[in-house]
Every structure is written in C-alpha cells, then in structure tokens.
Image 1 (cartoon, rainbow, N blue to C red):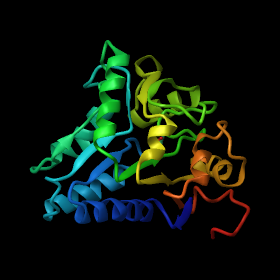
Image 2 (image 1 turned 180 degrees about the vertical axis):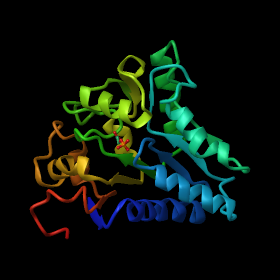
Image 3 (image 1 turned 90 degrees about the horizontal axis):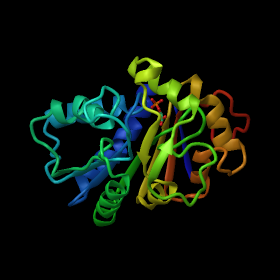
Length: 245
Ligand code: PGA
C-alpha cells in the first residue's frame, strides 16, 4: 500500500480526482467505482466541473461500492447521492450507470445481478472512504477478510455517522447495506482510500500502525500493492511513526 500525505480536504480531493481523470482520459472503456458520503463530495465537484469544461465521459462506466437498504429515493441512498452530485448535473451521461438496488425484495437475486456486472466490467479504480471505526464499504469491524458481496448490519458508530451526514433522525436512518466484500474491493486494478479530518485520526492510526486484523477492516489494504491511501494532516495527526511523512 502506498501512503500519500496531503495538507487538507481540498488537496485530498484533487489528488484522488487526478487518479480518476487519468483513467477517463487514457482508457478506452474506463470503469470507475465510486463511494459516497462526505469524503468524495470534493471529487464529484471537480468531476462535474471538468465535464462542463469538455471532459468526455460518454465512454466511461460508473458504478458504486454499496447501497443502503431502503426506498430508492430516500435522502440517504447512494442512488440519490449519485444523481444529486453527478448525474443530474451533467448533460452527457456516462456510457453505463450501475447502481445496487437497495429497495429489492430479493437480496440474493440483486447480489447475483450485481456480481455479474462486476465480472463483466473489470474496475480500473475503486474509490473508498474510511469509517471512524475503520470500515470500508459496509465491511464493519469483525467482517472476515474473505467476505464477498453481502447484506451488512451497521454498527452504532456507522449509524451515527449516517444520521449526521444526512441530518436525519435515528428512526429514519438505515441500519443495513448491500456492500461489496473485501474480495471484490481488492479485485479492482487500483484501490484508493481517501481520509480527511480529525474524527478519522484514530482509524488512520489503527490502519497504519496497528495490526492487520478484521478489527480494523481497512488494514486489509496494507499488504495490497494496488492500494493507495490519501490522508490529510488532521487525519494523520495521531501517527507516531514518521516514515510516511
Ligand atoms: P464519510 O464516510 O465519507 O461520510 O466520512 C466514510 C465511510 O463511512 O465510508
């Protein structure tokens, strides 16, 4: 895993976006898998800006890492986020848009459908955010490192983050997500984890200086040659070792 330390949220977004842009500009049939939430908002802004300035995404496939279980148009869904932050803001759409259906009544069928898409469209890049508890996707602490796409139960820490991110009450907050497992996450050609803010500092310390263990899900990336983690100064503030500074 490569570690890139940057100054702040804006620089993290720029560096993350550069990796995506390079793929869009150089591959014939780029496949980008995004995450949602507070972390990638800056990246989406940069992408929309560039599309307005002529970046061509008509040959690009865009998909997602996970989806909350709940009504498709709920304020918190990945689908809502993707339309609000990308698809509704651009005139030329990507070649393919793939989303997991979190309103499905048949989880198994939906899982198989999405797994087939993953097989068919090898991802050039998988963007990830880091949970305050170290989760990636909805692979919460304790999830075995050989997990494959599954229906995950959120921990309390994750439920609290969702409430805060979408400004919603506990009763309206989803508690389950269909998520790619570690297996599918690591199958992407490049895996990019983005981390910003003091509230992520403990998770970053566990990720880089703790053991490689399912108790810190993101630590699975440490031994991964195709992984890059981009960390801002606040998120790096608890690190003791200096070899990545
Ligand atoms: P955030 O969430 O980007 O809203 O901080 C990260 C995550 O939980 O994956």
